[in-house]
Length: 124
Image (cartoon, rainbow, N blue to C red; front, side, top):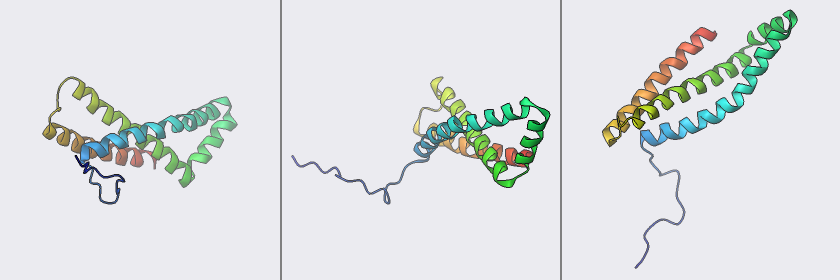
């Protein structure tokens, strides 16, 4: 019997469904916040050491690049939190169908984008 499965996948033609994309992004956001927590803790530690350290952190946070990095960490944290809540809801047996998975993925994307936008407004 001949095996018709592809030997090499062509990723340019591969079409992943939205729930798969949100799941992959959930994992990527976990990696981002793993590294980002060190940055945020370093900023917090620096700001709590002395008054001069606090003023230094304030000066750093006035720089657009540092603000963008902090926003990216917050965005990853928010996405990971919202996608994690979706997974907890699915653990309760809600949204386990194909239609439910698509609806949940759409909700994760919309709510995450709104939360990221609000975090950007708050930060800037």
